Length: 240
Image (cartoon, rainbow, N blue to C red; front, top):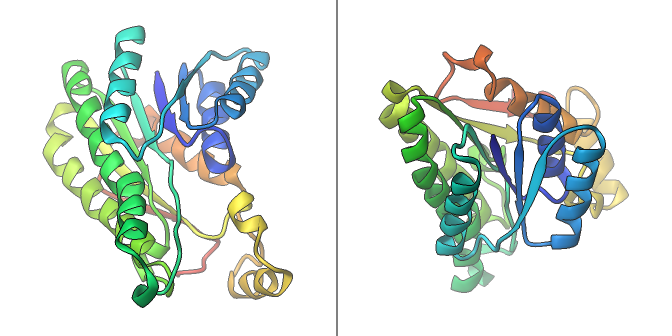
């Protein structure tokens, strides 16, 4: 079974649908109960199985408790996809401590707590997949996103450390760094920004959530059993 955070929309929704199609029971985690229910209904309509779990990842203890209840419900956890994220953009001189802490808590601290929580049941199984959704911003930085870039860069180091600590237990850990993906977050960009982005991407288009989900599907599979500690960039060649 698989746990997916930020499962109610965008990339998280696409990942949840893809893993359900692959045959996983999917535990959907997000803050919006109604949106989660819609994803669950879509999965079940297609013949899959899913459950909804409302949780605010700003509170790590609540996230840990949610994961523990999911593991107790299903008796195991095979895949954890840490996809949930948030932004509070602003230039560094204007960024408040609260803005910094909130983004770090959701985008990095919660991921650490989640990975630490699933590690024990995965060790008992001697099999597991931890997949963390970072960003090309974590690799290159971005003006106005000191908090977000720091959190996403932290995910790279965290993922590589997990890979080294748990590889001997049959657990792999990898990160995926999407570029500009067609989601609600990018839909708000103006036409000029959109054209500029598309012009700078070698493939001349935004990526689709399903293309990130396909990468998750592979990393969660048996076929990716000898891949760990890696960052897979899905950005249409933007950072090549």
